[in-house]
Structure formats: structure tokens, C-alpha cells
Length: 126
Image (cartoon, rainbow, N blue to C red; front, side):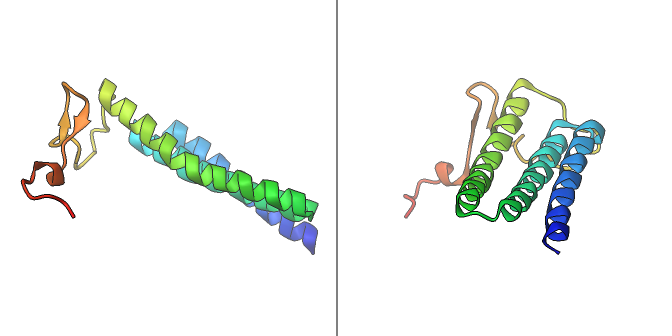
């Protein structure tokens, strides 16, 4: 029974990673590709780590697996943000079907900074 549970975690993790790879190949622009690779790839890696931890069934494997999962959860959103911002700064074109570009109104191409409503207000923030 444990082998079946381990197999389910490993195969589902591999399936998520396959979906991430297909998303990178098939999706139309950088933001959607980035979303596919970070969300599905991270979920796949975490499911595989759960399968590995269950397979080893040791406290050391649990500690390492938990550390790896926490590292993935902490770094994946930061990496996605950095990739997306770099792509936007260098002018990677968005897909023609993109409905709304929320950064366009707030992005300063000269300083590469974002303007926020809170910074534009005269009232101090609490």
C-alpha cells in the first residue's frame, strides 16, 4: 500500500512538471509561460519531495524534504517576479489577446520604477 501512495505522489509530481514543460512550449507570451513554469513546476517538485520523504520514512529525510519544499515555496515567487519584471523592462511583447496591462499606467520607462497610488497621496500612511 505504501508503494502505491509513493507512486501516486511521484507520478503526479512528474505530471505537473510535464505540464509545466508543455506550458513553456505552448503558451503565447512570457507572463503566461512564467506562470506555467513556476506554479506547475513548483507543485511538481513538492509532490515528488513528498513521495521521496514517504519512501525513505526517516526523520532526516523529512527534515531535508521539508527544507527543500520551504525553499521552493520561498524562491519560486521571487524568481517569477524577477523574470516577469526583467521581461517587461526589456520590452518583451505581450500576447495579442492580452486584455489589460495594469503596469502600463504606473510604469516609468525612464527610471524603470513603478508608481503607486499610496506614494502619490499627500497624506502620511499609517
